[in-house]
Image 1 (tube, rainbow, N blue to C red):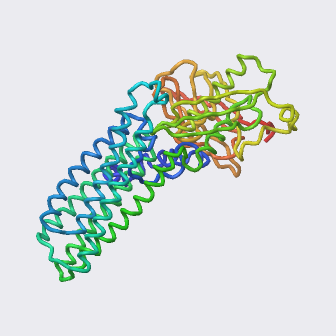
Image 2 (image 1 turned 30 degrees about the vertical axis):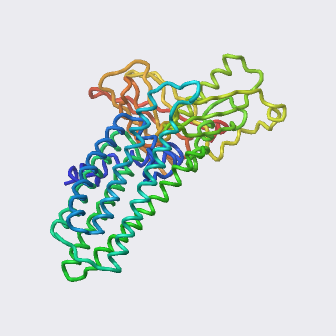
Length: 454
């Protein structure tokens, strides 16, 4: 039963890792805050992966077939509740249109006129979709009000019930598909889309309830359900329009700038937080940053700082397409600031120094790193070892042992934990290595920079 529930998207497998992808180690890693469901906007964490695009295409096909079947029954029956539900499903299906437009045009090379390419066309397509959904919602609302004031008999109640069930099944199929793929690619946005499709399935069941109400002698049940679904569509239109317009005028989602500033906190060599500016070009994120460094750095050292900063931005902002970073010598006031500790980092800490070890079973480096899913423990071996298993056991206050199994990554010789280590990141721990019945325990300590005795 548990396997069946997990296959349907209700189980626990993959949930915690996806949740971590949504919230990160401190609630700021990975993602861009909450992922609301919008029409006309493609979430970048979906659009930047081939499996995510594949999921969107098949979701479009399933919902398009569902909506087509419902349209046939709407024409034959005159049910306004079913009309509203059909419009809702059509709106969900059209989410794939800006994605298709973007990936058709993004392949074209920039020109002397369009220096940044054609990413903004995606936003224009999003506006068109929002306007179409809005006009359709107005039509559904008008029809529902007209039937409420001037009740008319509904024909083919059995077919209306069947069409409502088709809408439920179609949305549930999309929900299962999106949740499973979302977990596979660790996309919290796609999982959220799947959960939204599951809620959409309940609106289709409301159509069934409306038809049953009419059958029981309450003809106003159908237009009342139609009005309720229309109000839900208007709510989605408002949310979608806000998101599309914000991107068109170069706005970004709340918290993304803070996310970029947090990423800079992991980079050594910066004298103060950088000045960061973000903007969207379609579903691709562009970043401009200016940071201050010690004027005594050599060109090679400054280039290393710039490279590390760009890598940190890429890890914390998965949709990042291009980063333009300028380094400038720090002012005298900045250089004379009290050196009592690290530069303030908005309440976040710098990662502890890596632990380098040499053991009988393996040798390598263990560290806390920032990933798109948040902070994780990562083990990087000097040479890959076949059949090696690794676990980090952290000794916490009160005798509690925090266990972090390390799973083998796609890259040979790299192991990563599914969850972040708890705070604080200054602790005594041991690395447990095992292979072919042999076990080796390597004790170690991690301390946060600026707190060597913590």
